[in-house]
Image: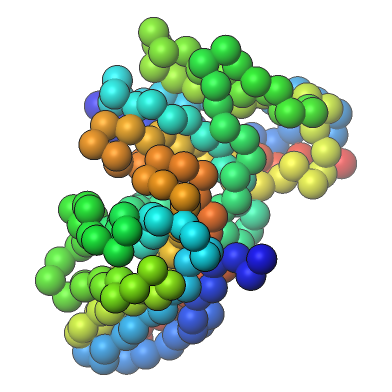
Length: 109
Length: 113
């Protein structure tokens, strides 16, 4: 099983739609979880951390399911500016940081 | 705050040449990471330093790659000799600690002909 599995997409959704991505991890020692966003030809930037109890930042909601070893990102009321690649990140297990390969989101007018 | 600074931003070189990529982390950050990103393989961690000491270099592809961090404010990634398959975007990132939020530089786009 790969360390991190992420659906590459692309997810093509209309403006205003709700979209969700999942990301599974195999290292049960993972301790820290993040979602990063990467725009085309730019560097990845932190979108939000993922906490055990779940957390929300505006239209974005992140959740962690330790039992099934996955994290999720929910985007409500999608905007054109949300179009990007979303990378899940896991840290832990001998201090190793692992990035997923990214899920591409395209929000369509 | 200047953020993570990388140079050069673009590099085109011929196979066999030596390539040196440079990174200045955010002041006060103790961890520094070098990544390589390609369409085929995504973002790969090459090596990371904590307090200037290399902690994990298991991602370094082969002996042609080497990285140094002589002080807290500077790191280099060297490829010698370079090969066409090394063409990629190389990112440097820094964080307050090994598992903290990583802040990425703008990357160096390397093309080896």
